[in-house]
Amino acid sequence: MRSIFPVLTVVAAILAFWYVACVPMNIHAALTNAERGGAVVTPEGAAARRDMGAMGLALSNTAQWGDTWAQAKPRLPAPHQVAVELWETTVQKKITSKRSLVFHGWITLSATLLGFAIGSVAGILLAVGIVHSRAMDMSVMPWAIASQTIPILAIAPMIIVVLNSIGMQGLLPKAIISAYLSFFPVVVGMVKGLRSPDQMQIDQMRTWNASRGQTFWRLRLPSSVPFLFASLKIGIAASLVGAIVGELPTGAIRGLGARLLTGSYYGQTIQIWSALFATAILAAALVAIVSMLERGTLLRMGFRR
Image (cartoon, rainbow, N blue to C red; front, top):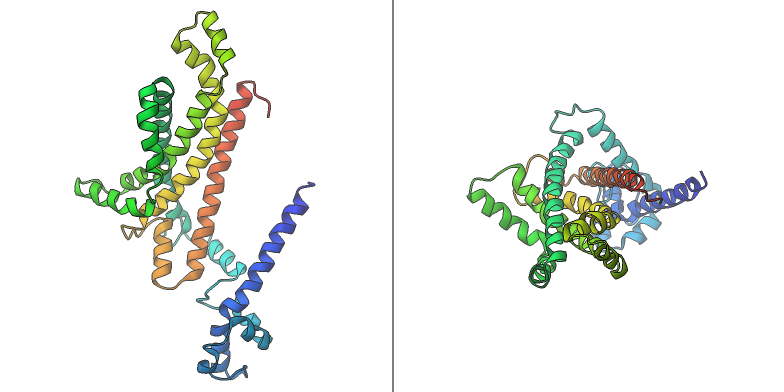
């Protein structure tokens, strides 16, 4: 309960800042609409206001502030407009409707989960190879690091085109882009975890005549679990970003990326912001699920956190 008040205070401050930011962002359109409706604004005429700063216009026309929070296509929608759009497209629409964010969220989530599974398995296997093979450590790890320097926006269209040319369409290309983003955090975290036992612990395993496999299963792997879950939380959020990016080059009509695209095509900023918030909520839910799995797993292993 002690943490609720600080959290609510921060949320209230963000909302207040957001409402204030809407005024200068939307004031030009608000004054134009008010003038067409017969209201007196300062200065008169859109041509006279075109080169004026938004802050100056907002301060000299305080009566039109309310209109900046109620426009159909604002530059920056007000928080309540985004909340209404989220409510209407998640609760009031059937989940089979193409206007439902639940429908679009599931399309993106399915690619995210498949890509996350592929990326996590690949990352874990690669990390095991790197830890046990000096050659892989020196040859593969630099390539893994270099792969993350390539912008995903540049490589995603190439992946889509190449896979489309061999007949792969739909879910798999997006999943591969998600896997591309999620495997690297898993590799780094898993390598660090597998190498976390100190030399004294490894020497102790040798004194017990433990084989390399026994050292791996009974010492290295349990030691890597906290590192693995930390990287999985990063990986699943990155995987969601990859799925959305994978929807953009194809001009997709389904998925959260498609909602962002159609919103930008038609200037529907409220739709764009609602899709962004839906993405953030989905990412938070996925990370929370991984955190719950982490707590349960660590408790069963005897870790107290």
